[in-house]
Length: 179
Image 1 (cartoon, rainbow, N blue to C red):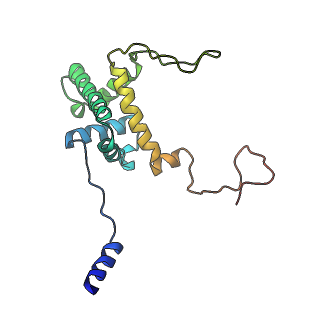
Image 2 (cartoon, rainbow, N blue to C red; image 1 turned 120 degrees about the vertical axis):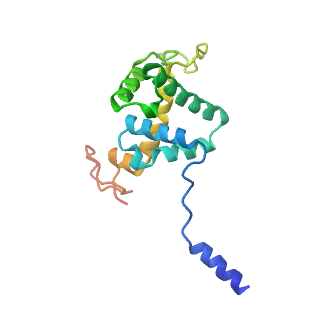
Image 3 (cartoon, one colour; image 1 turned 135 degrees about the horizontal axis):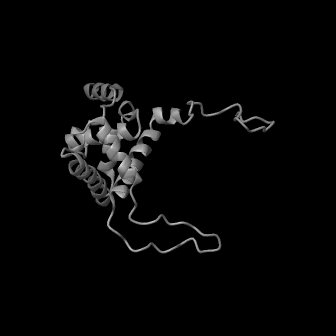
């Protein structure tokens, strides 16, 4: 019993193992996501965006996983159609041009807008096949969310790590904001 308690104490004090480098995407897909992320949000590599997106995808629904893989496939297909090479084989200028074209393309439908005086629940328009813009937007949303959830991204947005602030810029509240 003493040996069992010692083993338990050792296991409890041992550092947790690092999560696996990839859990859903294959190595080529993971590298593609990493380079896409860096092109969309510089600093994504250092912030660990691709492995984080990979771990999130592993826990996501099959529909969301398929949509993400379809978006990656659309970028690959566009790279091949434009330049005769997959995304990872493109020069930086070619990658920038492809992403610029994808982001400027037309979405499959206009975003739903609320009109004052109208009910909030407006029916969805009929589904249209996703465009390259739709696929790009899906990737961009996942990448940006992962980056701005990271410590680097939060610091970029002004997070200081402090939970309580003495004052807030532009807030003249005389009582302060401390505990």
